[in-house]
Length: 448
Image (cartoon, rainbow, N blue to C red; front, side, top):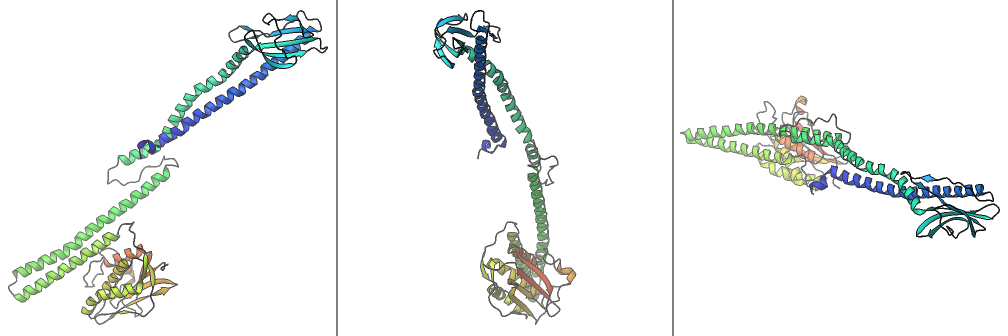
């Protein structure tokens, strides 16, 4: 799209100026035609009145007859030509500018005639005794001159006003678009890190929504950048700890003289690498899910089947800690969502439950429907979480103090983000046994 097509100013001018010119031309034509008809009627009335005056003054004995003369703007006398015919055949009286023959062959009313190479507008009338025929005429060129003078006096001011109106439209459009140019200058002059609200105090009502939306966009971008900065800082801090531990254990292994001590140090190095790898995987998962416009696949998933696969993935770690995972009996539960993401959600919930559960206990997974809406609950038999601390669950890198359990502090953040993508809510409660933590993900819609 070219700049000419995008210019609001050009589009307005291309609409307004031709419209004004067309309206002016139409007005001028209508004024000319209407004015000419009105002037013709007026001059015809003058011919009729002149004929009536001649008839009244003749009084049966035409002789010394006067008639009103008209003067044009230059002062030249424009005479009406008149003739008085006895019985319509004998010329008894005529004006000096009248031709020798009858002005018109018509004996009554208005007519147009040509005589001596000139065109005349003629009015003919008989006296009451029907003895004298009076004809009064005016040259068409004189009438056209009068018509032209009157119409010109009307159209010339309009012709002068047209360019003035065009300039007013030009400057008016430019002034009306001034707030947009001011807003553009504000945005163009900003540094990339300047996300302060735009000044829209003097913006008109058409521009104010644009400025308000830009300000809201700046606020969202600023909040997103702040989140990213915190995320980067927290990730760097969290990665520093396992890497430092790996380095320390590697140094111990290098300096160890006893094979048993070296093996133990190398085992710790492997464990530290595993923790760092898990942290990086969690960070990558959260970074991939973080964009506000992330779209999950929408397909029909069996929540119970997803839970079975997640249990199979976590079962080796649970058996190592002598913890059982139990899936309650129940029918299939269909939800609309991304089965892969729902599997990540359940694996994180089960991983947390296994980490915090006491040995020789059971982690219970329950799927079903409440008010015809799907839900899944993962309940452990660990120390639980105090009600005051539950509000912090799901914050990035937040871990319970004194738990003595290693982790990244990102599992529940991933759970909350995946739930948000699916339009679900996450709640934390005590288990039915009165201890441990029960995490419930409730979906707001089922599969179609």
